[in-house]
Image (cartoon, rainbow, N blue to C red; front, side):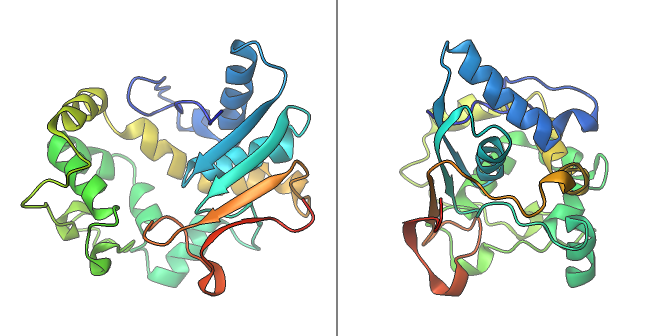
Length: 229
């Protein structure tokens, strides 16, 4: 079983309060789904943004997680500074996390032409896009979409029906999804009590080859068990 359709995406719930999207709320959604299905325990799998949700579900509620798998993003490791501060220093405010953290800015850019935005997102994040377009840095004045190619030929894996469904779903806006990023520093604060703890249920981490989410460590690829789990 995978993590649920998370709050803020498509037809899922869209609370207005940014604080309603912390990692504690997201883990609570997973717990709620498991209970709603009438289960006491579950296998939890997450990819990219879903991976931290899966890892934290296993970290905070090991009593209900049979095993956990995270794709592209490793288990949580607490740094010495808040994540947005770290990225702001490293990339001079041009990292996409910092761009997303500007209230209303990315929301308006993506909502201006939802279908084109989604087409660019999906293509640019796919293995079909040239390597040079997988760039997490953003010119705040031009926006994130400016550097993303709009494919002349739609990839075979992306149908017009897919785009129709996604466009209709995200016509409700992108703010809920962006609110995940706006909680990065708050999550860093909220998870301080678990600093140094480890995921105890059986765990598997999958690393990517063409997936731009995450970065393989020391050239690692494929999937492996996490030592000691």
